[in-house]
Image (cartoon, rainbow, N blue to C red; front, side, top):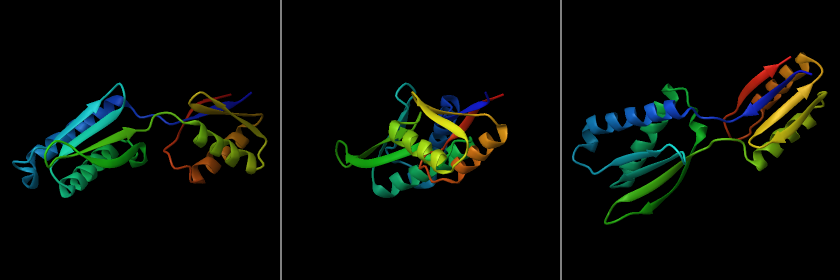
Length: 163
């Protein structure tokens, strides 16, 4: 029976490249000259830690990271920019989580969108992905189109399309 998986993945190597490029750009920018700014990527936890002096620098770093990630093929919706916290002295710290996998709430939302469409397909949540099966490939392609149009709030990819 034909099937495909709906997943949400971020390639760690592309993310690393984007962060390295952003770090180089920050080192070369005039408005960051002489500032104490650090960007660290934890590849295991998929968390970016930004440490800088003020809100203006924090906003500029956020824009740089998003633009560099976009050029690497990482969607901006993959980043969860939390609140800023005061670090030692007059420094600001922000921890940015990189969304990996589909959690239960988003999975339920995807299954509901597919079931409400009236297509003859079955959607089931499996760990951090949603598997959609059906008898006809056309129904599966219609399900992909419906999920792309829905506002899920997380970037999605469609993998393992099988006959």
